[in-house]
Image 1 (tube, rainbow, N blue to C red):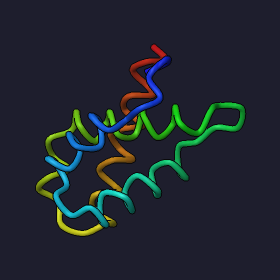
Image 2 (image 1 turned 90 degrees about the vertical axis):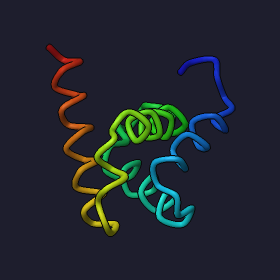
Image 3 (image 1 turned 60 degrees about the vertical axis):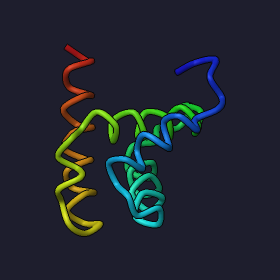
Image 4 (image 1 turned 90 degrees about the horizontal axis):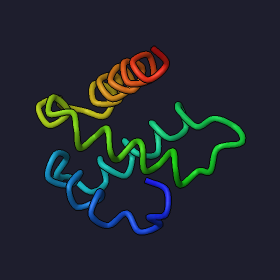
Length: 85
């Protein structure tokens, strides 16, 4: 995602998965707080969260913020483990 400061494409794609804009913003906020590492630019963390939301089809079917946050967090943990291996 480096060199791409505009995330509008990722945001609109994520709106296809989570149609409620408030819920999407809340999911991105919560996931960013959970996953942000000091020393990493915040915009990179947000871009990664949006990318993962776009890649995970199961997020669309889960009702409520807590269920979606749990699914997103599990997906992010799996992505982190796979990239470390």
